[in-house]
Length: 574
Image (cartoon, rainbow, N blue to C red; front, top):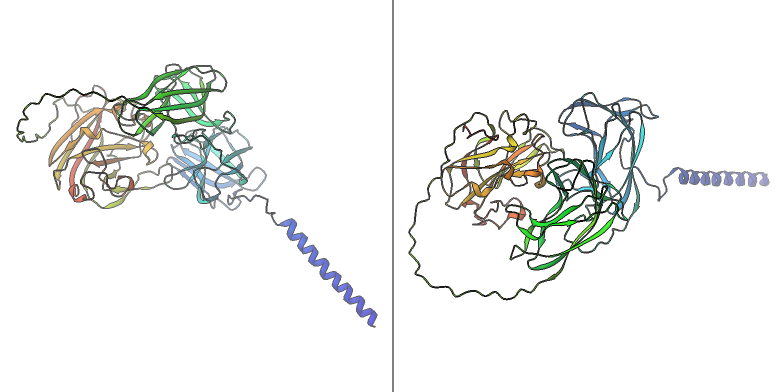
C-alpha cells in the first residue's frame, strides 16, 4: 500500500510541475517580448467602428466603417460630397519618444486615385512638427500598402499629445471615396541626434520637415522634404511647375551682429543645372541689404558643396530680423527641380572698424520751439466707386480683458475659437466677404487697402499705431499678412485714414490670395511699433508706458477696412 501511495505522489508532482512549465512557456510565447514594438494607434482596422478616429472637413462629407477592408470585415470609408481646403482624418493624444525612429504602415486607396498627405504633429498650439509633415502618398484605385519611416523631432521628452493626420486636401474632389485599413504606427529604434556645426539657422538639413523654411512663388510649385539628402534621410526639394519672377526659399528672423564676418555653407543642385542667387537682407520693409545681395551660385546636376563669406552691413546694433534667401528666379523654368541640404550659417569673426572722423559743427542759436496743434488728418478726395469689398466694419472697445472669439470654420489644427483682447483683437469678416479667391473674378488682392478709424474715447495722449492682419488656414505668425502700422497713427479722439497697396502688406507673399481666409485681427501698438499687450510674455515691458495699461485702455473705436481693386477709385465708407 505504501508503494502505491508513493507512486500516486510522484505522478501528482509531475502533473503539477509539467502544468507549471507549460503555463510559463505559454506566457512567454504569447506575451510580447521586451524588444517587440507595439502599435500606438487604437482601432487600427476600424473593426470597432470609427472610435478613436476623428474626421473633419470645412467642405462636406461622411466617415463610416461600412465597407470591407483589405482582408477584414471593415475599413475606414470617407465620402467627399463637397471638397474643402481642410479635410482630414486623424487620431490624437498619441505617445511618442524623442529622437526615435518610427514606422507608419497602412493600406489605402481612392476610387479616383487622388492622393493624400501624412503628418505627425503636436495636436494643439503651436502644432509643432513631430517628425513628418505633409508627406505626399500616391494612392492607387485599389488597396495598396504604404510605409513611412521618420525620426521624431521638435521635443526633448516623451510626449502624449501627438496627432497622426491623413489630409485629403488639396487633392479631394466632389464624389471622391477614400478607404483606410490596418494603420500601424510602431517604434523602430532610438537614434542619437546628429551633431551639426553651431549655426544660427534652424532645421538646416530638413530632417524636421520644412519648418521654419518658407517657400514663395508668384508662379506655381511645391516645397517638400520628400527626397534623400547628401548623406541623410531628407533634403529640401522644390518643384517648379510654373516659373515666376519671384521664387524664393527663405528663413527669417535670424540674429546677426554688426560689422561681423559670417560664413554660409550649403549643399545644393538642380535637375537642369539652373542657377540661383543668395541674399541676406532685412525681412521687413525697407528690406535693407545686410551684407549679401544676389550672389549668383553656379549649381550642377548632382550634390555639390558651396561656401560664401560676407561681412554684415546696413545696421549698427545686433538685429533679429534678418532673412536668408535663396532666389530661383530668373533662372527657373517649368519642370525644374531644386534640392537643398545642410544649410549652415555661422559667425566667423568681428571686424574692427577704423575710428570715424567727425567735423566740428558750427554752433547756431537754437530757436525757441512754439507748440502747434496736431491737425486731424483727412483723406485725399478721390472719385468714389461702388466696386469695393468691406473686410471689416466693427465698433469695439479695446480693454485689458481677454476673451475667446468663435471661428466661423475650424482651422487646420482643429481649433474652433481664438484668444482676443488687449493688444490683439480678433474678428470674423464682414458679411458677404468671399470664402473663395480675392484675385478672381475681381482682383481685390492686387488693389488698395483703405482704413478708417473713428476714435471715440482714449484715456491718454500716448500715440497709438493701429494695424489689421489677415490670417489664412491657421492662427500663426507665418499664416498672416498685415498692414503697415505706421500709416494709421493717432494721439487723441477723431477720425483718421490710411491707404496702401495690398502688395505692400507685411508678409503679403505668405498668403495664397486665391484661397479662403480664416479671420481678421486688429493690433494696438505704441509709437515704436510694439504691441501694447501683457498677455503674451514676449511683449511684456516693451511698450511705452509699461506696465500701465490704463494709458491705452479702455479705448472705444469704430474701425473699417475696405479693399478696392486696381482702378476702382476711392472707397464708399459705410
